[in-house]
Length: 479
Ligand code: BGP
Image (cartoon, rainbow, N blue to C red):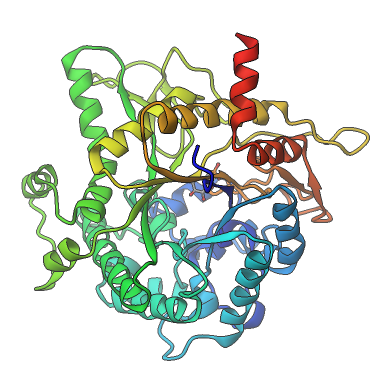
């Protein structure tokens, strides 16, 4: 691995900050995602959050109070020797309704202190501009990304960020897991589907608007500081055919394209032919501005970031057992074991995914999410021995190192997801923990919020210090 490889961790405002009304922040979509059985329907945009019962609990509103704990949290990251840290900015902290003419100074100051603290600790900030986050007022007023109006609001937000932080932050990601819009449209992009609407039309229109916004943000960033690096972000994980039946292979190619679509546009600057044909077959006409296609062409991203939790698998006949995974339903792969939440565990799949993406785009990649969601049980003495997490990270890091050192994939860095425990995006639970640092809080919101390093904390510190070579040595010794 290169000497300046960016080892680190990642969190996001929507799942860790809390402080939902602090310092003039306006409500955002995350504040309306409930705990419990209705969560999935609200995230999918099929249930209106306004119809939720009054006693509903919204775990994102307080989360793990990253807002109040950021100095302590950054100190812990520094102890692990983090070289970078990916976090997101809460849009409605900066523009409470999305439409103010001036940004909220208190919000900007919070992130300024945050970034300065990271830099003081020698940690490179990697900022996600929009991580499942949009001011609620834009959802109510314009139906979120279905309206082009939101492109202007997003750009005003980006401009405020680039002007204030552009000289301090080099790596920016325009949208987290942009393809999530297709699967959980409300969580991913604030899209609530109305009765009688064609969901495919609505989602692709919203996608188009986000893609144009992302390209315009890239343009703006480069104008403000030419060496800024802008990335797109994909919820990745190659789709395997269940068998070598050509029908299964064809199905897997189709499924991969559903997700690649976004990155094809953001990295290559044009709608791919298969997408044009698909839209034509569906009878979908996208509302486009005159210059949209030129904008997409002229402002591709600089790097491709991705989350990887698991590979996927499909069979054309739709038969057989289903499997869980990061949001997309999948056929059960009989060769893999699963996490407690039923997500397949496939380290080699990471190497496969990295190679597939690098072959396709020939741009630097950045793994900005990878990790294991598991229940942690503090022992009598308060220690948390998360050997299962260490095993997962160990195997994925080795697969990643093979992709770099053996296959020549250009990779900027690797960040462990949820490095400090946070609220799970899909389930709203605290018990689905990813952290190297434990946060004392339970699913009902009880706990002291105390931060406690887990066993994986020291393990990861050693990995960073050795640039991963210790894992290789240990593997060799075991052979
Ligand atoms: C990704 C998101 C994250 C994160 C992660 C794990 O989809 O970008 O926000 O939450 O998945 O998912 P979960 O929290 O549902 O286990």
